[in-house]
Length: 429
Ligand SMILES: Nc1ncnc2c1ncn2[C@@H]1O[C@H](COP(=O)(O)OP(=O)(O)OP(=O)(O)O)[C@@H](O)[C@H]1O
Ligand SMILES: [Mg+2]
Image (cartoon, rainbow, N blue to C red; front, top):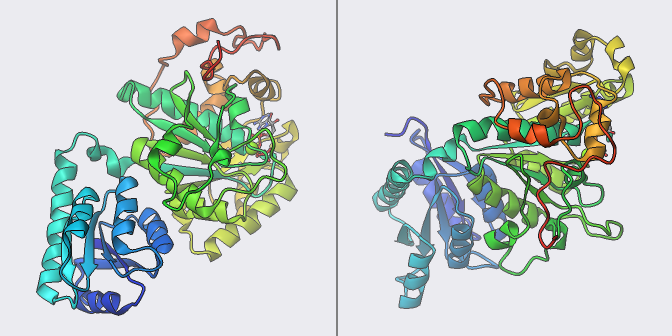
């Protein structure tokens, strides 16, 4: 018997199958229905957000048939078993498609209680044994999506997202060298600048994707990934022609995050603008929300309202971690205790102001955690990584790279210094 209930998602446009399954499961703590979807889109989103163990899909789902949804689910590489419910015995073609989509079992409606419960249990057990036997799936549960957000612009969200990604990548590289450890997704189409902070010029970004009827697939997302020498992989959404561009759609962002989560241990998302459909679904999807608060009174008050809004929207308080950022030297005049009392929340980390180092690192596209690992601002970012459960250890595996840099711990940098971290972008000589 599993320690936790088996999480079940049911997709059924009519609702009758769903009601029937729910009636079988009522009162049995071994099972928990975590979502009911009435169409394909809803099924895909709930599958990605709720992360069920077992998904039961009725083949009569509208407007996209159940088997097509199973095929789409298979593309997302989710850690869930799928069961297909049909109204009558299947034909050969359906059987072939079922096998290709890795559907665990077929159930014929009207469903029988014992048969249905056995099928759910078997599918769950089979998936669990694959997970324990598989080399890659063992890390599935430790994968994390961390959304970096903030109530106002200019509070240091990108600075935190970029440097935290590099700090985690450096630590993770020691434990799992060469692994797909960290990806940074910048989902701000209009003003995303994570690529600039890393001195990368992406050739294509999420903004170039047009969604086909079958959604966004893994290859499409993977073709947009850019590697940085720090070990961080970047997925950018920014575009050279941001004005007049559509924002990303919910479908694109959900698919992108699912692909990233299935491939990388840590996915950090620079959320950028808040209050959009895309930012909301990202916050739903993530495991941790880092709320960066620029330290002045106006920003603290805006952050307090944002925090209240998130709590009202039922985000668990423990999912939200507050990062205070001293954006100006004067920020010091507000104490951490005062900030906590305004925010009505405890603070995870406070990032000090470093008025030369931080802007210089942005201008050069060289994250300060790599170039100046012992500076107070880097230590704050490392503390944040540790707060998130990352074993950041001592020392650095990037010593060779530091030597190549043209600016040292004394900030004797030159604006003309070439980037030691940027990997030449595709097609450059
Ligand atoms: N701790 C700090 N010390 C010194 N300067 C800082 C610090 N944090 C941020 N800054 C400065 O604040 C500016 C804004 O930072 P950043 O771009 O990371 O904010 P943002 O919230 O991502 O803004 P945007 O709304 O443009 O997305 C940068 O120019 C950076 O140099
Ligand atoms: Mg930003």
